[in-house]
Image 1 (cartoon, rainbow, N blue to C red):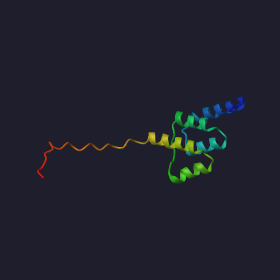
Image 2: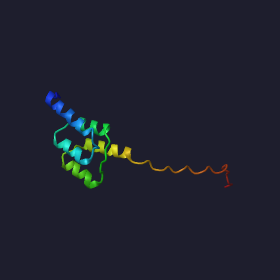
Image 3: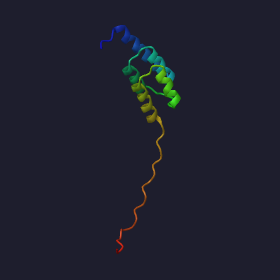
Image 4: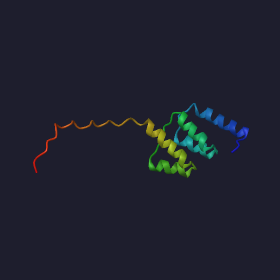
Length: 103
């Protein structure tokens, strides 16, 4: 797909403006409504800080606004990476030697 120079420059300008702010669901919806490609939106999600709401109603609102499933998946990945790590449960201590009981 060939991208014309004005469209490319507009996309770069949009990215430059967004670089100064934290991405939110609203900013993703605006980019999708403006006609920016999935690749540009996904690049923004990967490159910038994000504060996304990912509850069921939030995801439905993104889809209703025309955000693609691929972009929504990118938001979910970014959000999962930003979440604090869950504490790990230590493995149970090994029991003594196994002995066989007569049958």
